[in-house]
Image (cartoon, rainbow, N blue to C red; front, side, top):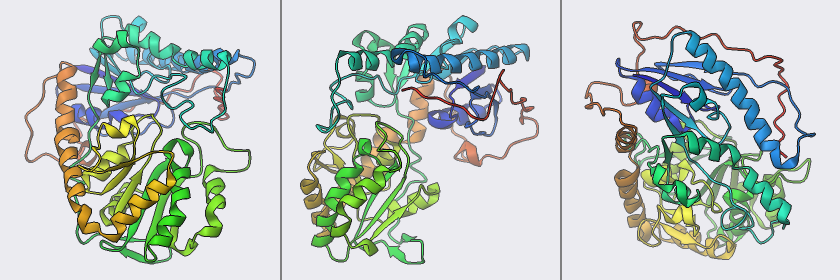
Length: 446
């Protein structure tokens, strides 16, 4: 079978599925992505390059669609190259949030198309205006939010089916599309993510934290309000005051992944740190940039309590990974988190907007970790039962109508670790340079 994946940041959510399919000699697996896409063993990757553009003259309602249309054009060029090389996919799996899936049905009308349905924007009831401090907007703002879904809706109409990682994320989509969308998580590598009673984590400067020390952790791609960074920072002074031996380790970047940008020249990290800095013993607060995956795992194997907060938005992999590692997770009492954590059963929940409540719960766990150890064990059981990668891959392959291969006990457990045989190694595609390409890409979506 010939299978095509389309994702500007490939492999992203498709790492497990594409890697598994690429192991089979019965499949030819090809991917299209932007210049940020990464190679995956056994997968032929064709990268496109976005041309220089500026959407400042585009109507604000249409700016996102303008950008998505430009991406769709580059994918169209890439599809032409693939077809010229004799590749006609039987199955296409793509992410519908970038515009890249727009040309798929017109170009390959007979292919089975599955799109990844990550999130549908709404002007209320989800991330928008969840924080009472968010700026309000009028009808024009509501229309602008609706218009962000234009390419997604067009792709949904064209697709044979959709894949959504959680039930709550599926429910963000219009109800008329629900029968088309299947819930299946990408899964976490439960064989790799295991508790370690002897874990330790070395901080910059050489200090080593050990399992059994009082440690609270917070991890996000970027430290920003959408992921509750401000709530954690406002809770931290009370946590450290209540627990004089506690250490806080915070991992995340200074940029913005989601939501509004801070005032020019500042970062959300610095804004909320400055707000509480005079109440903190900064020698016990350790900020680290995004870490290699093994370091991330070591930290969560070492921590006493892990805090995961999010507004009603996409659920992060890191929370499920923390559960698989047997962490005692304190999460925000928001819909995506409630889907995985049952308060008092396999973790703890606390209201998003209440730093004092978060501080109290974290302090209690730090004071008597053995009293909460059962929550970590139950969290791991949940991760194994509902989010184990091998099971999620089988579910996804079944939904896509693909044969599920019998496990090979001698094969590597992850495609990324698999040796690449000379017979299977694909001839590399030439990276296509788009017409009018420039290194100064501007994707101002307004």
